[in-house]
Length: 142
Image 1 (cartoon, rainbow, N blue to C red):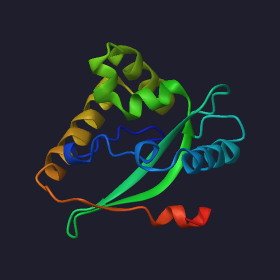
Image 2 (tube, rainbow, N blue to C red):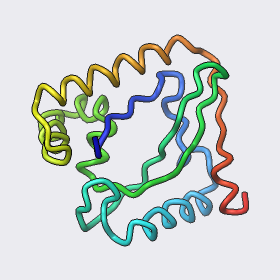
Image 3 (cartoon, rainbow, N blue to C red):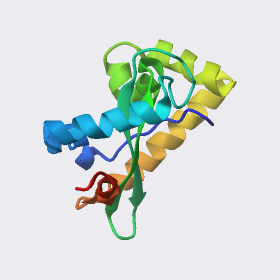
C-alpha cells in the first residue's frame, strides 16, 4: 500500500520531534522534508500545503523506536497515518475514503489494514521501556 496507517505505541505518544527539538532545528528538519517533496505530498502527490511527518521503525527485541526519516504529507494523508486521532476528531470517514482512493482498494481492505495496525500497536504496547534513536538527525549536524 502506498498510504499506510501508523499507530505508535501508547508509551511513545506526545514525544515527537517538534516537541523535543529546539524550534530552529525542527524548522530545518521540516523544511528539508518539504524541499525533498518539491511541493507535493510524498504519498499521493497532491500539491499544496504540506505537513511534516516522522516515520519510525520499532525494534521489539531491543525496545528501540528509531527515527527513519521525516516526510512531507498533505493533510488528508497525514490524517490517515494518524487515524486514531482523526477518528476522535470526527474525520474517520474522510480518512477511510482517502485511504481507499490513494491505495485503489476496497473498504474491506481498509478495515484489514486498520486491524493489522491495531494488532501491531497492541503488541508494541506490551513494551514499557522504549528507547528512542534519533541518529537520522546527524545529517543536520546535530
